[in-house]
Each structure stands twice: as structure tokens, then as C-alpha cells.
Image 1 (cartoon, helix red, strand yellow):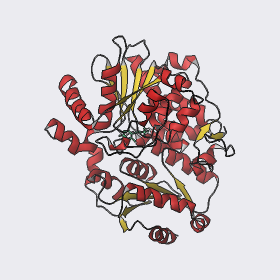
Image 2: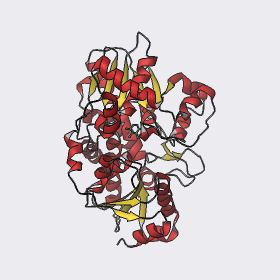
Image 3: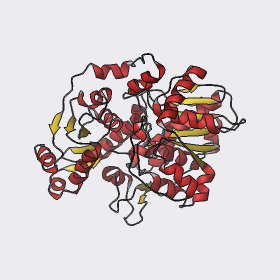
Image 4: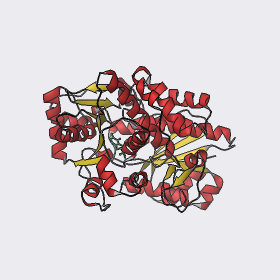
Length: 435
Ligand SMILES: *Cc1c(COP(=O)(O)O)cnc(C)c1O
């Protein structure tokens, strides 16, 4: 299958090139040239299939032309080595718990899949040099990517993060791993880390000597696999005896997660409508209201993984709907929540339903609570474990949040990172020291 750029000024490429490059040369995002609907028979007995079986069918629709079925099957089953249960919150609202992976956030799915697919292509092309994945993180992406690529042969990962700006638990998730993972602690803010990575991609000398790539949600191999769990959510919903289409609500920042769901809809997944829940960074919500897309600098909120002022996957939403605002608002509605409302959502959901939310899931739950019609049922994506945001959550509920075993394991490790200034010259010197 060919992939085109949303900016329309770059040639179409193969899957392997789209995965290895990440961003198109015209700075657009790659999109599959076609979206293949799955047969009705698939949905008829979907409730009897396992997560891996469901995911393989979805994966084949995207990657089946480019990856041998036996290899794709292995990539899918290695990726999904944990469950994504649909849990009842109350009679009308269900939570799709995406936090049972190694770093306790949904990004594990995309990062683990991308690591395996990239490694597959690297092996196929018999590259004699290692591929270096550079990733700037404000917390969650670095941990998912580092853990996803841990021990993958032929690939080295360098995580750049701002000193003192990530939580202890987040930092431990990418500084304690060793092996093929290097962590660099930058004396600056997240934007400095991002600039250093971008400068490295632009540097001729580095690109001649090394094979550098990125692993953010712009990459099709990180973004498309997120469609898997929407189908599995529907299978579980159907198994519970529901025969209507659910409303699905996604806490959104860069809009990769919800866009993967919209791809699912195009493939025939029965969804009544979508809700994108924002925190105060409500650029998309404002777009739905006005038809105007006005990016603005992000503000810091309690749901910090959604602090995005110019969501990169917005270009993909536009491409899916031929830039038609009316069509977009027919399928998707929005919601926006302040920090005060997020705190309130965590406490009311716990009091009303006995269910503990993280600050991101809190936006998702609230958006369903506020917008579901009396004859509708809804599923929200619980994108991270509440313990990842321990301080915030504990300050709301006034009791301790237990850290799950998967996260506890990291806490016992020893931090190892390279301190660095925010000057590109220093970063370049570091890269040139690699063999
Ligand atoms: C990344 C992230 C989001 C936002 O997802 P997008 O795909 O960027 O919209 C929401 N919640 C958590 C916990 C995240 O880590």
C-alpha cells in the first residue's frame, strides 16, 4: 500500500519508507491511500474473537500488503502482551482501561508495535548500521518508546527530557533501563529537547554518518495500531449484551488516538458518534464551534499529556473528511474542562461509582456524563493509570493511591542519565561519540 502526505507536495511512499522517515519531506503526515472496510461477517462474531485475533484482522487491512502474515501475526501478538479490559463504571458508562501495559499508559500499544515493525524493516533492508531513534519527551512518550524498543536488535534509542520537569515515576521509566536506551537530561524545557531533536534531523553531517529517525505519533506505525483496541472495545461491549452502537469518548491532545478510532469507523466499526475531550487546551473544541483552526501556545494543566496547542494529527482529521467542517461536526463533538473541573470529576466519579480516574480519563468520563442522551451508552478511554499522577489524584481523594507492580518495578531501579546543556553543539558532540 502507498502512503501519501497530507500536504500533497511529496511523492507517495511505501510503508517501510513512511515508517523509517516518520514525517513526509513536505512536513505533511503520511496517510494510507485507501481504508479497507472489514467484512460484515467479522463484526457478526467479533465477540468470540480474542484481542490478538481482532487486532490481526485490523492490522492486515493496513499492513497486509507489505508485511507477511506470519510476521505480522508475531508483531501483533508480541505487541499486545497485556489486556485492555472494558470495565463498567455505571449503567451507562464504561471505561476502556488502556493502562495495563508496561508503562501504564495507552502509548504502549503504538510504541511497542512501531518498535517491532521498524525492526522488521531494518532487518529486511540488511542495514549494516544501527538505527538511532531520537525522542523528545515531556514524560509519557519517552517511557513508552524506550520500553517499546528495549532490547530490540539493530535499534538504539536516545530519550531527551527536561531536567526537573518530569515526575519521578516518569523519569525512572526511561532512565533505569540500560541496554540500547540512553537518557539525556537537558538543562532546559521540553521545547529545547524538541528543538535539539529537530536540529539533529536537519544536520547534514549527522545524517551522512548515522541513520536517525523519530518515534512520535506522527509516525504511521505508532498511530494506526491504536485502532486495534477500539474494535476490541466493541467486541467486549457486544459480549455484555448491548445491541446498540456506543458513543466513544477520547481524551485528546495531539489527536492521534481519536484519529485511529475514526479510521476504525471508516472500516465499519459500529460507533454512534465520537467525543473529543480536551483540557483547557481546547483548540479542537473551538474549531468545532467556529470552523476556524487557531493554534495557540499550550498552557500547563493537570492532564499534562493533553497540553498541546497545535495538535499534529489535526491534519489527518481534515484529510479523512476532505476538510469539510460540517461532516466533521456530524461525527465528532467536543468538550473542554478546567483543572478545577478535572479535580471535581475525579472526586464525583469515585463517590458516585467507586471508580478512580486519572486526570486524562477524568476529562473523558466527564464528557460522557455531560453529553450522553438518555437512550445512549458510552465508552471512554482511560488512557493512564491513576498512580502515574499520584500527587494530583491523592490531593483530590485524600487517600493513598497504590502503585501497580509494573510501575513499582521501575521505582526500584537506579537512574542513569547524561546531563547536557540545551546547546545543539553539545548534543552533536554526544551523537558523534556513538559508533
Ligand atoms: C498522549 C496522551 C493523551 C493524548 O493522546 P493523543 O493521541 O495525543 O490525543 C491522553 N492521555 C494520556 C495519558 C496520554 O499519555
